[in-house]
Structures are given as C-alpha cells and as structure tokens.
Image (cartoon, rainbow, N blue to C red):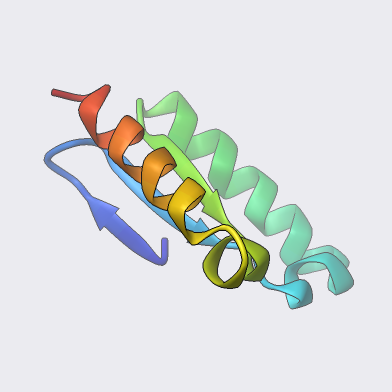
Length: 70
C-alpha cells in the first residue's frame, strides 16, 4: 500500500509504469488487490496522469471513497 486510512478501510495504490512492464510485479499487484478487496478495503488506484493532469478528479475520487466509509 502506498497510503492507507485503516480506520476508514480506504487505501491508495500508485500504479507506476514499472508495474506494467514487470510481469511478476503485475501479478503481485493483482493478488494484493484481490486480498484487500476480500478484507473489505476500498482501493483508489492512482496514476501519474491522475496526479499531474486530473488532480481535481482524483481529489473527488478520494473524497467519495472516504465518505462512503462514514
């Protein structure tokens, strides 16, 4: 996990390009994602594009994810 709010059950995963280029990393990411969902976590996946080009949309996604857990 790159950032988590355990009390809210919300976490953030940064999906860098290296995750797509390394098949083993990609497989680990998929397994971790499935495990977190099974345990009730809500996952917000974040890309470089989200951070640099769609920041307001990202903030909205974060607010919605946290609000859904209130």
